[in-house]
Image 1: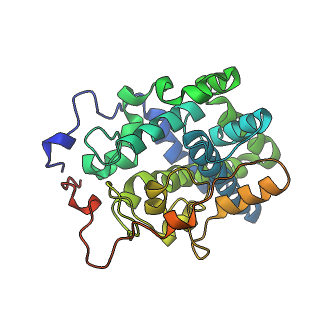
Image 2 (image 1 turned 135 degrees about the vertical axis):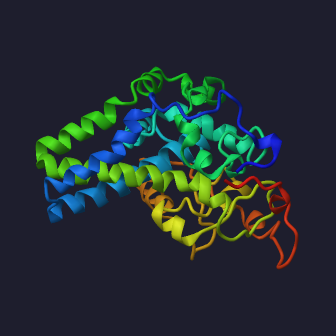
Image 3 (image 1 turned 135 degrees about the horizontal axis):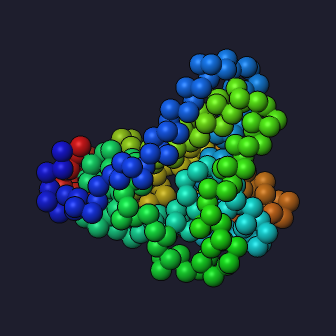
Length: 295
């Protein structure tokens, strides 16, 4: 339960059950696999769609649209946005605009999805709230100038619908329920744990004014996003695993893309930044001193 009044949600910050019905039904859809026994190819498709779309979310929605950590041509920009939209997590402008707000107000009372406003709220509740359903265009003006991105943001259900239809046509109902629906549900929560668990669980390397943490397990699940304390410390880097032993699959793919001319200008972490502002053993940290409001 939220105990600090500064973090308590207002009357307009409630889950809209009726409007959220499609989201809840998506979680029931994989049960169709009970009637259409999954084949090995369906399981492989589930894994492939999870990994591919996680890349579009992490490298596209997050590192590109959210932080402009590298450069893309206009065609690749649209392809990255379309790929991210197939994850059924709304449009690129909506996603990145709200994410920028989170970084600007991270773990403060005005942060939309800090776990200090409730664990369920930070994980998924805020997404199901009507107050945050609109795209915060003012926060994403640099990309809102592209009409194709505005169109895709408005009609963000088209890409996942087209993907679902393609999976059904090519693989039948077992591929649809296991390959598409199940991977989409896994993808939801694989993405959402970065908003919730990486502000509650893991280790801290850098002093920040928020509660961000690093987690190898969550980095594996999210292709590199689990190095969240690194990211909050130096947000503009295309690399979130700052050291060679920190697995960051999304960055490795972006690096290959840069070699073949599909991406450019990948921002890295300067050595002096990487080695500074470290949290010493037993040292009080600003982020740790924020008032508790776990739910």
